[in-house]
Length: 310
Ligand SMILES: [Zn+2]
Image (cartoon, rainbow, N blue to C red):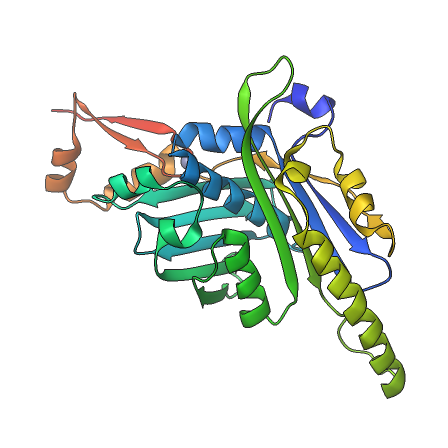
């Protein structure tokens, strides 16, 4: 992200919030330059760009909520025209990246897709969420079958079924033209989860009462978030704080510091060279074109060229 953008109003961020005194926490995400960078580099057909943008928005919210250093990875794999969607968020540099793989031979089917219909694009498969905290920790991983017409529906299914965390998510991606600026991609989203505090001994009756109170508050929060329109998530003239007030003013809403989100990729010349070293001389020879081997990073489309002596 450029320094000049930082000094203006923050346009790529995650805003954490809490509803009333309840254990209802959430995040709002806005991706402006980050969405444009990711999606314009890939040049996918629009329905797939939309889906990849949604994945980037979702991992930004989930990743920014991590309280330790690590990488939050979302991966969806299927047997449809799109074989894979991957998005990840690194806490160390607060950076998101995302990509997709198109199944060779199924490009026509993808071209016919009208919207980011999850099951149509991915087909049958699974959704996987992982948290990678580095070599000193076990990789945390949860997997569920792909279900739902949209990525948000599949993710809600994942959290409620696999993680037993009541969750509501809305995601939106679109091309917008702001006054004096070129048409660009934008992505937005909102997520709420009911996460009761763990431990503590409470009087049974009080706990029950609190539970009922929580239940009602959760039902309201869930319904309010489900009602959020795509426009509300993408409109740059609607501050996220105003959207939250609009949704939760009855219960009260507390917002915390925004996390600025950037785009970054972990690829490097050294890493790609390391991958190439694993190939046989014969295979490497096949990759040579015009006196060099060219490798493009799947995530950021950065091109690396390695000269080959003949
Ligand atoms: Zn890269």
